[in-house]
Length: 106
Image (cartoon, rainbow, N blue to C red; front, side, top):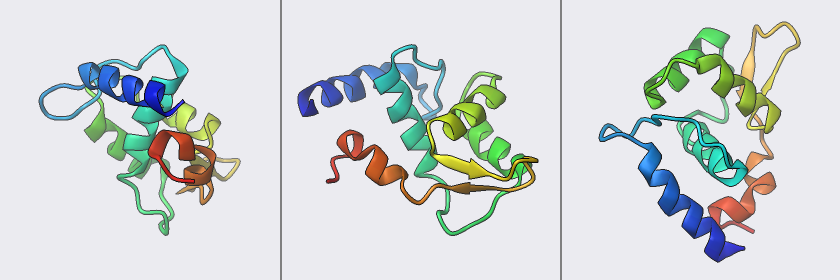
């Protein structure tokens, strides 16, 4: 699968503007995962975030307005954890293991 992952990385580059912001959320799952990885890598794994903090991180990395979609996907794909009331978010410790095939780690 490594070769196809590299292909997805190359295709995904077309989704970014010159400032490195995602212009459109990809429809294919592998490219979605890679896009979410790129956002997650900008977060501190040892920090607790408010929803406002998460929204700002996402806002800086996308060039479209659906911050809620990206935040929800990050939670559903298990990049982020959160309290039930949404008052606190964190980077899930196991996301790198879950998506090791996408980042070249075993």
